[in-house]
View 1 (cartoon, rainbow, N blue to C red):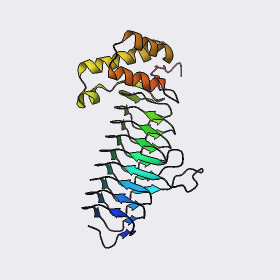
View 2: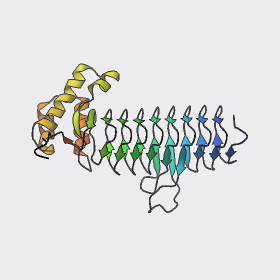
View 3: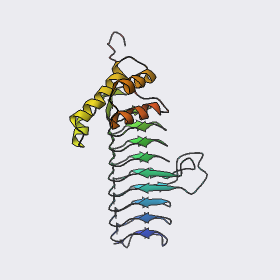
View 4: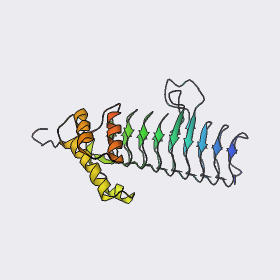
Length: 265
């Protein structure tokens, strides 16, 4: 159902059962999947692809050109999966020639005032809490939760099942399955509660904890810690995910937490 006060380009492809509220603007070269709801005053710009059964709240702007001075008007896209919710006044920019698209997966919750910049790759079941600011070419893997007002530096990668404390400044990669918090941002242990909620067994969680004990508590550098993990710990899927992430990190991973007394400060 299209509200009579909405403005929809005749070349936009609108799926069956889509609800479009008043004062919505939908540009050409837009595809919206069936059952999606577009709230009032939302703006959907050229190059946007929205999946099925999404919920776009009032004031959201999706598909605006990147805030990247290298952008030269190339044809790029924003691709949003199925069953994803984008709350009020969130902004999601399309890609540049670097990757060609900005991607947000299925079953995500992008809360109010979040900004997702060009060429980001957001996985499935990700939650970005209010006012999270995601710079260009950031990768956030499946099931990650990023606390409110967190700022994420360009090119950072956040691993699967990570929980990031609200108000964090993320300038290094965060490996999978962990909690990250404090100032400066540090490893705060394994996200065991979140993992149990998602069906991980106690044995799997212990294997993950064993990997991070070596990585963060053995006082070995990352290269030697990875070698010890591979030689001493059983070859589980979780171990391989951790080792691969750390070994392929381009920015380096967050450090372990080191207590600093008031006298030392």
